[in-house]
Amino acid sequence: MKIDRLDVRELAIPLKFRFETSFGVEQNRRILLVTLHADGEQGIAECVAGEFPGYAYETTDTAWTILEQFIAPVVVGHDFATPDELLHALASIRGHDMTVAAVEMAFWDLQARTLGVPLWHLLGGRKRPIPVGISLGIQESVEATVEAARAGVMDGYERIKLKIKPGWDVAPVAAVREALPDVALTVDANSAYRLTDAGTLRQLDAFNLDYIEQPLAHDDLVDHAELQQELATPICLDESIHSPSDARKALQLGSGRIINLKVGRVRGFRRARMVHDVAQSFGAPVWCGGMLETGIGRAANLHLSTLDGFTLPGDTSSASRYWNRDVIHQPLEAKDGVQTVPEDGPGLGVTLDEAFVETITTRTASHSG
Ligand code: OSB
Ligand code: MG
Image 1 (cartoon, rainbow, N blue to C red):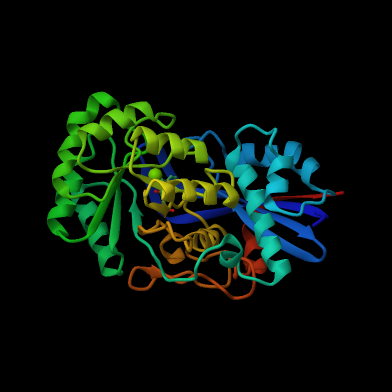
Image 2 (cartoon, rainbow, N blue to C red):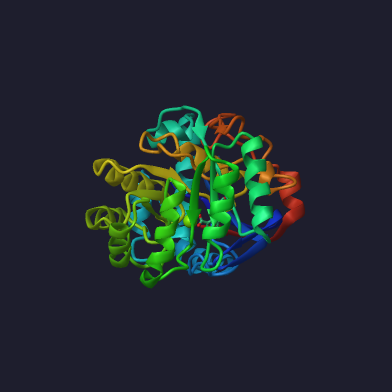
């Protein structure tokens, strides 16, 4: 497929809640959407980089620059038969995986639409209901945390993930576990601890957590392996895994037993599938993480979650939890803790609400050959 045009638009869209993690607060999101055009068809994807470089070094602005300066010139006017060929053309760009992923994902959508098949089919998944849970940011009090967790369970979610950080860990986890003895409960530290905090983290073993997500440094595998030896609770890696070889090394070292797979973090669907396959070869479960996506990124996550290795509930909860109004026409709403893979047409199976998107667009760029 010869790419005729690459469009980028930046949206400003406020989250319904203040999302606090160990690395900062998100409320007003600035999100890039990337569209590829070829032969009268288009493919679209969301770049999951955030405004602040707290989770990853990429930001909305670095993504904009990398797209404009280094990706558009390589992609526009060129012919690619497969996502592999596209990735190969972009191979000299080190890192910036979320930015490359947005283009790679748009290419998959474009291909699926051109072939007239749903994206899950092209990815090699199996259409099935997708179990999802919720990720609760750090709340103002232990009581507020218990209330938010209870509300999640009332809404039908069967897995609740709590964000933790030093000084905000054992107390909220103990309170939620006491209030909800049977819910699948997990915690996510977003790299806030050091190996010397093993004592605190070991206290969490008492609460029957499904996993502790990314307790140690974002670029570490070795200390995680040592920590895992000291914990009964499985470690789930998020920030540390950027590639199939990271996954192989982590599972070989015993740095964790579960992977939170985010398509943006691993450079797109092709690599996400490879990470998934590596995890499967170790018998390690994966689940689909979230990056506070709009309907475009949320739909992509649901399609990816149809691969067989996604055996734990993902973070792809209802769009209405995040937004007063989503950017797509189709409501992506979980019922009884389960999401349906959108299939209103080929590809992502969703359509952009162009009129609404227009009102929240803050800048656009169009690159054509
Ligand atoms: O660590 O999983 C994370 C959001 C932004 C950045 C990192 C993370 C998260 C979440 C939210 O946990 C998941 C979601 O609800 O989209
Ligand atoms: Mg995480």
